[in-house]
Image (cartoon, rainbow, N blue to C red; front, side, top):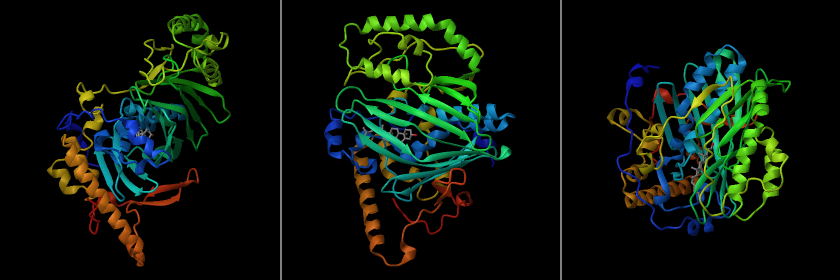
Length: 462
Ligand code: CLR
């Protein structure tokens, strides 16, 4: 890949126009009619969108792709696992404070991106249910997978399960790693300030050596746990080899299990006093469900705070105030001796809050110039007029275009469903449903050929 010049290139650091405030429009008044629906069937006013297609949003997994190159450059499998796990966590970093809804990709929509560390091609391979497939590569790695975001309404919050496995292959080592992304929860959709939580267990498996990184994304039920991620790398006999810890919004570090144990012993008094401080703050607020929270904390496999929680009474850390501000983040950070930092999040641009809380990487995703226009596939997200209008601050124009595109898509579908000719039936152009060789589960596998850029006979979907 001729990337030398591209590395030098400067990408834009903001959008053509700042975000237009949504006004008083209440999210709940829209969502209450959408209970039980697929994410792609929920129509929301375009003012709740961010000017990116979900294919572009998915590409944000690649922001720290250099971690996969680093993984491939390591000679021992544990170091490789550390970097692959760091990549898996880093891929979620951009979700912090990102509350706009990306546009549903149209069926057959594609998105490509070439950067110094990788190139990626994405395609919307199914509309109902919505499935987006991607395939990224470089001389050091292959990263591919598909996402089918399943949404569940829980009254006050919305929970999104990104169904689908992702796979990293390191050709130099003939290794494959797979994992499933954790759940994402958007809180306070009825009242209060929206905030995003990612929680659950992520298990990165090296299928050749049997090493696993088992990472727990903690739920933000107390400020100390807010955004925290921690867990162990274990070998095939479940022996702990590394302790990894950090925050998905900020960084990931690694140390040896002994240093972690020692640190826990030496600092147990600190955790205690942290907790006592918290308790005294909470005294004035009514107790909600301390027992449940306690049980949750205690059920976590690893927690530096476990000792102080389990020996204590019931007045543990409490739920964040309902329908209120999100729990504040703890200011104290854990810094365990003999740690190395594997990943640190890029600072958001200064003007990020005026631009949908985009990262630097996200700002450039929809950027287009004459050169790009001349070579991308006609189905590329960058050519969607509704997204373009929104990034230019034209909310009404965006809404009109969005409706037009959706109607056009419906018409096409109707035409195709009534046709008897087999060749007119729609089929993804770049991906095919096949068993993933490493997990044997059905997966959307890239069929090759995109980068030869022969786009003849591609349908006009915009
Ligand atoms: C989270 C990380 C996963 C992939 C994934 C799938 C769906 C995304 C979600 C991520 C982030 C939050 C998200 C969601 C779709 C809609 C939702 C962008 C990227 C936004 C915040 C819209 C919420 C509006 C509801 C209240 C309806 O690996």
